[in-house]
Image 1 (tube, chains in turn yellow, green):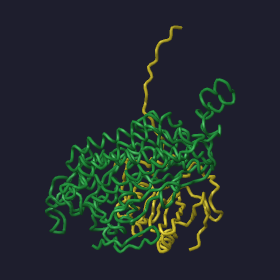
Image 2 (image 1 turned 90 degrees about the vertical axis):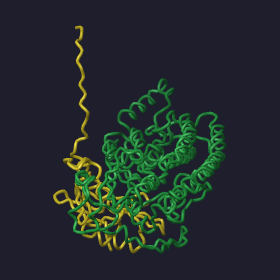
Image 3 (image 1 turned 180 degrees about the horizontal axis):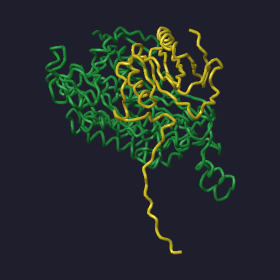
Image 4 (image 1 turned 180 degrees about the vertical axis):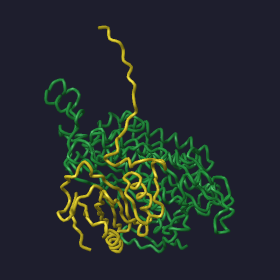
Length: 155
Length: 441
């Protein structure tokens, strides 16, 4: 499959559209990429001016980043999938690589990106009744309130 | 279920086994129910299911505060009698948002944060983070820094595996093993304390090199370690490996085949226990691992005993590497001489205005990293530890993600426990050796 490809620090980075993802991963699996090592996401909310995308790729707020490895050729590659803000849905890779189950749950929990056809899309790190998605850039870091006691100055 | 494993080597990785068992959406070993459901059903027999065979099943919550769960791992077990049918690990009890915190810390402060993730092998997270930052900066650390990093990481692998020996023994009822494991680990930590100032959470490997050079007389301290640890490993063999009781508790308990391990993205001793020869130190050499001689330990049956034996023998291999590093350690700088990245020595600050400015800039603003994204992986004692780093050109990471091996490896748990007894479940958790700090981050 022909998708925009760039090279970043010696690793191939592919930029498929979200509709192409399943077909591309199926193809890569047949090619010998036998493990999805990592699946995570980035919220480009406050850094929309990123310049490392190929020209044909339209930047969106979210990006799902999938690292795959081919143990035979020892090649690693990365897929960066643009996910739009209004409808943050990506297809689940569970049927191809069951090991992505908890990684996808983590991305869902932290970024609010839904994975269609995921067997158990629930929060994994945060409590079940938590509101919001902590790793989004518009989710505040929060702090522990500290009460400073004012001491009366002599003057 | 076939679990026959064909002879594998680094080149030909053909595997005759199937992974159907881990692919199932329904009826697999994973109990996909919510936590609140599990709480309300706990202790009651399930009666509303359509399948009459499930009527005798009971939901049991194990943990999060249970001595055998290695921290705060909670398990929802579906039991039939004393047999575990399905289960689900529930995590997040130690979640402190360290990936979010990393975005508020500068690159110079970042290693203090990541070192607290895998608290049993903190140097590896520091290493992965530092390597990622250095790749974005496109800098090369001096050879001595590389070799010191390698030395410290191998010692850390030893201390982590010794901790495993201790806790694994304790979980299986070999309580005296706990004391021995901690005792040897303490010897290694004593060396760490001399070098880094701390027993744990060292913040020693930093972008640009390491924090301080090795102390005077480090060779003697290392030789002392190399002298005391090997005979004690032989004692472990006497105490555990050859003992029929110990073997009966572990052999054949919690088996996984190679395709299942690959499908579940399991790495480290879990993958190697299935007979699959994959170790990043050999297969994607980083640091200077291509210049030292060591063997990758693999198992055959993929059971808990293999995972135990692999870890024990990896300690021996790490000792071999340490011995070679003793002779090969180059002299020179222990960190890069780039004043924009590493702070100047304290004495220079009193003499040089430039040094004072650099010091001030590094500790207030930090150094800027060119925009880009990078993924770097190292072989931690638990498997592939990766760091995905996105920089927007400022002095804080835009996004820092740690691919924790324990987090991913935990997915194998339900499959390993299926059909075993509750007591076996304890052995299986122990053999995965999860560190909850890294699972929850």
